[in-house]
Image 1: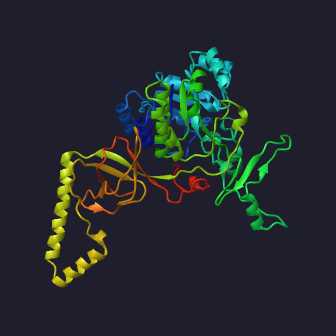
Image 2: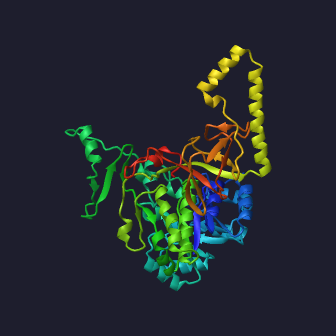
Image 3: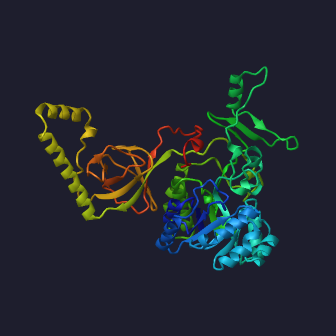
Length: 496
């Protein structure tokens, strides 16, 4: 089975490939149902083509899955030449109006039917096959028994299904809530996720605000539709949000054998708006689980990587419609949360010559500092030395050469202080917890030690660890408390 991972931008595309995806799906600006993802345009072409050369066996799928209005068709036609610059292997579409356009301009690209088309029966699959589609991304409402029936009826049609990630409470994502409340159509790629908004529970006469808040936070409030007695949908107010009709996250990693038996050809991970940390760790977990299923590694070897899914932002999980439709109807409370923060990505390793030059630069900087001190008036020098003693960060030492250590480009994304415990995560190593004094930050301009690193500042990490290409750095979130619902999915730029 193919493993298909999300890529909201070219950086995430790299991590999807590096962490084990056989293929990745991207969106192009203005034509994707994740319009708020970074998506791809103009300057990304060279980067994407380079990645395809770096990973020649990997596939690239492009989502053009909005419902097209006339102006969208015109825009598509105006951008055809631009699209042709991308090494696209397949287009994911739901609007049949663009099929002949794609067949004309991209004769070598496969056509994949989007899950938004809600294809869940064999006769529909036969029809799409006759139109030139080679793959159907089945509607999430299809159960395993139905998938087997479809595969038996149309054995030469590839079937793709979602296996992990957030799910919409509406049928095939056709929610009207966003359009109704914000005039942002989910089918136009602008879903506002209104089902997970920060609704307030208001009070009426006779009930104080404090009492209303207490009741809302008790977990005792539920919705019950009049004609469906006994079916309860929880309403829960957290510190910064109230959850109503919030679906559980899909998780099928423990059931890959059943998906294979049902005839599934491609396993799709949701998350083009998620962080590269999410893309990397979820992709890696499913890669290892698939490798175990195929006998390439043992189940025991795969288990630690699967367990790492708990360290990625997620809600309660469900198997969706695969076994029982009632499982998919269960809602949950709380925001997506993770015990870790993404700290940095590790870039290229410095050559031996580059390391020697960096160390020499540090020695030269220290000599210049001493020369400056020697040239100062004794009183001024004493004052400067006293200041250095009080604020040692103003006179950092040069990094000293250590046998067997390596230096790497360090691309910070969040603040990390020198000496802080960090963890190295890579495609084939679950996580290495750093030992004390096992790494140093180095200023590439001066060769001196840095006391911290954060986004926007160039940095090198000098370490005893041999880091695999694609390694990322994470730190524990000190505010994370297991079992406590936090609204991190809304307060952070991306969900980890």
